[in-house]
Image (cartoon, rainbow, N blue to C red; front, side):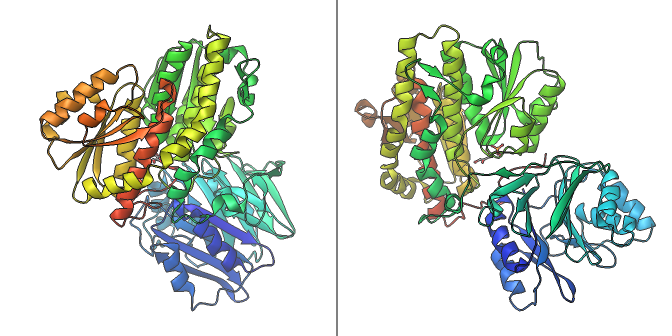
Length: 610
Ligand code: F6R
């Protein structure tokens, strides 16, 4: 949420910063700004709207210089206006600062600073930090001023700061909001996300909470906010520029939907040992028996990752017979849950930075139980703070609506179920069958992707006028109904609800009209017969039914108005197939309506605020 970029070196900062902002635009896109240090001082420009609007605005401005910071915003304090866009500055336009996170005590600090004579020009919490740095700045010791300022702050921050007295210096700091440093040749890059850096360097330093770093072209130094020097490791990331490009697709969401055969394969590659009929997840090995002997698992996550948690609950209980509970991270963190010894908490997060999921992780750690994480972004806060973890290896997910991360999360949950199951009585023969079924999934997803033109036609047929839609499923298909509804509403703004199909008659059935498409996920699983009954209940009330069904099911054709077929698979793996037509449906409804699918209204990737 919000993106930060910075550069100090010998090259044109403006181009690097604008390119970086474009890469980070998916993290926030309501306003943006740039400040560059040139021969005449620091020039700062801010704009409402997309990065393209900022580019237009700076077209006629001299932004020559090789040091600068920039920001793309997702508003928290104050509307998306030019005055609220970052960088923010102090009373004398000396200090320039960009910030991600939330300053909880900003009102109190602002009142104190105003009493001391500081004048504020925005409604943001961020501006408070700029004035605090101004207050503490003595001579050219920017780092000391930043340290003093941050000691006054309660809340989360990832910041990059520059000032007139320090011509080639950027000071960065973090607490709860990521800051990564890219190491080049006599140059340093800063970003809130590795994807902004990989076209320049793959040598990355991850800043830790309560740490600051002072970057100059000829070197960098890191310290804690309390001034204790720290030692940083340079890590090589394996993302490359190909992975963050569109590669002939119109949108990242389309690209990511179509990448799923490969990303799903990457999630199990090298982790299956057919001969021993075993799954090995390196990240969990250190936990050994603590993991295998877990008496209860609590899975906590948000949004789409929460839906994968619900699938995980079905898988782990079915396959390994370990009791599982699924909790919204935002609820878990503020409840008083009962967590007995023998419990393991598993958090799931694509970005690894979601504030509520991180808080759930910390709450579980505070209560002394082991925390495992399933995440995508290597080196993310959640990956680093957990006791053990498994990466899904889906590559960068840039479309704001999560697609490929969801299917990969389900693969890892399946692997965990099999691992736990093998330790608890799942026999070798059954294990082999489960492995084979998983290995078939990438090709089966490729087959499902062939229904795209049919789904596009359904989007036209049903959603030109529809303002509402229901998604219904049972068992493993219930979380997929939730996910289908979430995808549709978040990118096309068609109101959609997911329900367990049998719950429909307890209320939502009142909504059925011929104008409201009802999508049933109705594969031939253990409760197939029951869902046909629910489908008939909708038809009896004049509803229009789109069914996602198993290839070869002729019966369902007589009930549903339209049927999209997916290949047959064992029940725990069907969600990996049934979700794909629903991703495509949301995508085509949204594009038909002219929506920006990669950057939906009001949303942003990586929700780093509560
Ligand atoms: C929906 C979506 C969000 C995320 C949620 C959690 O398409 O992308 O609901 O799933 O914000 O994000 P992560 O997985 O990064 O913790």
